[in-house]
Length: 50
Image 1 (cartoon, helix red, strand yellow):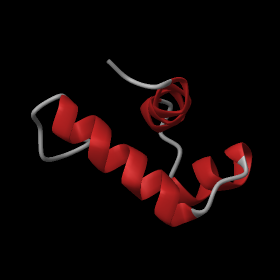
Image 2 (cartoon, rainbow, N blue to C red; image 1 turned 60 degrees about the horizontal axis):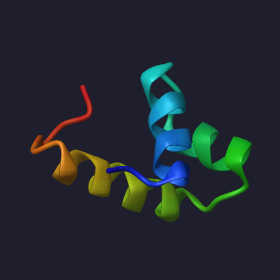
Image 3 (cartoon, one colour; image 1 turned 120 degrees about the horizontal axis):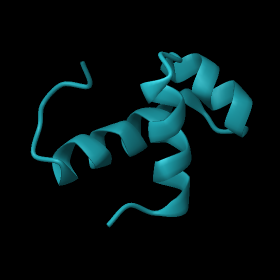
Image 4 (cartoon, rainbow, N blue to C red; image 1 turned 90 degrees about the vertical axis):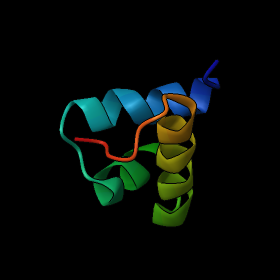
């Protein structure tokens, strides 16, 4: 199960936003967004966001 913050990141990534855009919009660092993306990919057993 994804955390609410992970879901926010996933929603923006699915709209085609970059990590940098997502970070800016959510008030996070780009490294935090990368961490969330990695966690989501691992939970979904995939290696790529595309």
